Length: 310
View (tube, helix red, strand yellow):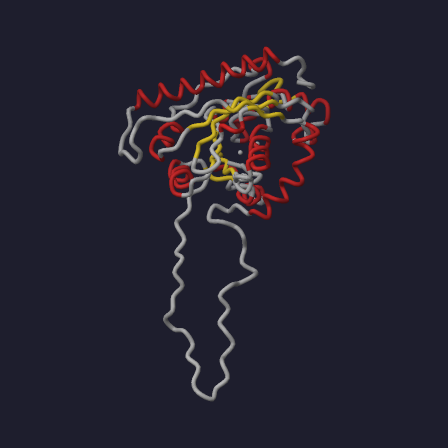
């Protein structure tokens, strides 16, 4: 619903993690000394071939590779994703990827992550609500795919200390909670927290406009009482559920054509790691980025001839 290179994103993308530096020194104290006349002892193993490839964030490159293989046919044949401006995503170093978010069960995150990991060979870590982490099985799989709990400290470590690509959707649950009548009308980008994180980490924000997710699983109506009952931000009834049934409709997407446009990177002429940044400046920058994505969406929709063929 975030393949950094895909490995975080290697397939994820998906989306944010920070890691401590690894010591390179190998200790020499306690090394075995062979006495005359004695056969050398078997060397102490220095590498355990069974050690997991799971990083500190829970991401597994083996799982990301498997996910890319399984998701590839969906990306190529169902969504037929086409990118423009991929070269604007940095080839190295940290960058915060910011995109519009839509669809009852959002399809944009895996498309973005998969595309970047496949095309640029950079993993992408996807930031998302902590509720995913707590769901049995789903939470573990989410982490293995590169999902990281959306917290400023996590984002900072991934961006500043590890130089990773991190994907975030500033609309939050308000994006996928929109009905079909409200499609491509961007909601407010929160309080601009993503801008402050980028400022503090000293990395650029890379806006991405996505067309296609709205139609892949359009919400016809939301039922607030049921959302409250289940503790969910929204409870949608989708066109997919009417076509494929209430359960199958939650995992079956319509073949909407995806087009993704990477906009020019946004940098901030402020010093990194400051204890405080101007709140008005943060809000202004966040709104400017929102407007840039909104204008790009309007332009892409004007050029689109068909929802299904693009």
